[in-house]
Length: 290
Image (cartoon, rainbow, N blue to C red; front, side):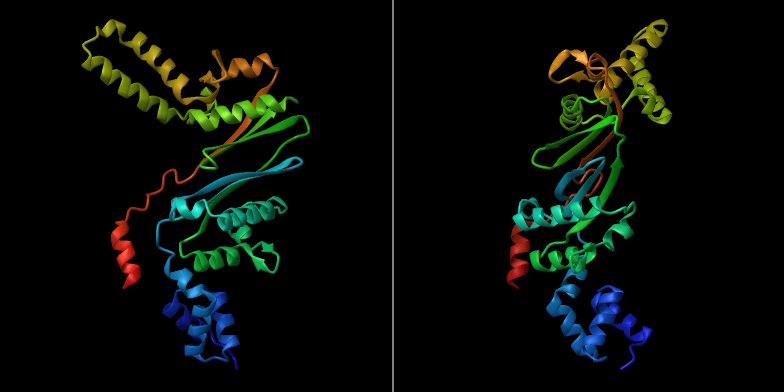
């Protein structure tokens, strides 16, 4: 039987499943809409689709490295309990290694990559249906280094923060130390030059208001602002932070002492910038019973 576009559209609207999944279901059921719905339910696909609008702000970040290539990615779930599950971690590794072996640069390409007989998107949909929570690949970044550079990687809090550095020089220990610094101290910027002008001006305006409210003399204001901007850099800029292994050095000085230069930093913190899932646990349990 010929499967029309309108049939696919109708099934998609009734189940929330993806177009390709709907078409496959209709083919398998020879165009019978009810059987196609059952097919999607049996495969867990329509169940997964219904969870698409739920918030998944927990999860894990990880780093995968092979030769001169690396991938940093974040895979989300709705609860930390699921993120600690061995099955979730296995899915994360499958996705990470598949992207690492590819030349994918954007999300759509990555989701369509083959991982065995399934695509990455298929794996995520199947995991969502099986685990019972929305699972989503939020973001990833591929990084390629030169032969003269080294990677440094560090996972903080069991994968809640993943930090990857690219350092000019052959000292892998330095590269890892700087990655650890970034994960632990959570800088907003890599170096002073990377601080956006609007961020800097905003901070200056806040400090000036503080100075006025403190009743400081106007002739001292500029020096006070200058001093506090220095403090702002030391707190938010990676290279200006005190090195966690030797507070007498800045990270920049530590790099220079080892004849190294930080060329790139990628840092993912799970759920940053996302709305956290907030539900009454008792109500959720009762809803499952009903």
